[in-house]
Length: 187
Image 1 (cartoon, rainbow, N blue to C red):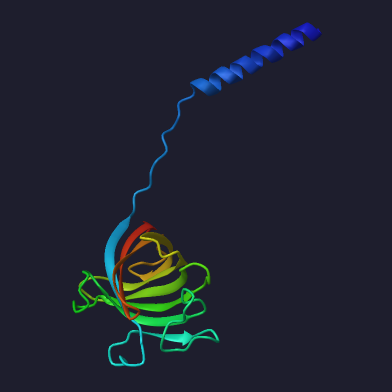
Image 2 (image 1 turned 120 degrees about the horizontal axis):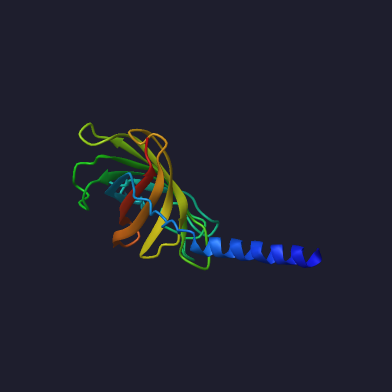
């Protein structure tokens, strides 16, 4: 009886092993974005002399800093709010299709990095209406990804990834980001 049970167990194990190795493997599907776009946003930080052109300002600074010049030590402790134009190309003077509104804060003393929270507000009837909302850590590498965490209007409940690339920098006052947006959930 024990020999029969042992034999049955061995046969069952061999059948299970052979069936699992001969089963067809389903290739993994790589998800394609349902919407993709490349936009630019232009940030001109207030430096005490450019109030007319500034699109961002320091609203929080560490004890050793001030609100017109970014703090030393990798700008640690600075909080900046912005209302930047969004364009379809890298020209600051192109017609904006919307505004990037939000904040970034420099969150490490020993390394140049920031944390971002902002929305793109689209205002072009020829292009799109609605918002896209972004959040995430920005290690300020050549390219970096942040999350698209929602949207309204044409982008209702959108989810995806935005790859940021610093396209231009002019001292401590101006920078331009190229934002390559890939949405994987579109309604």
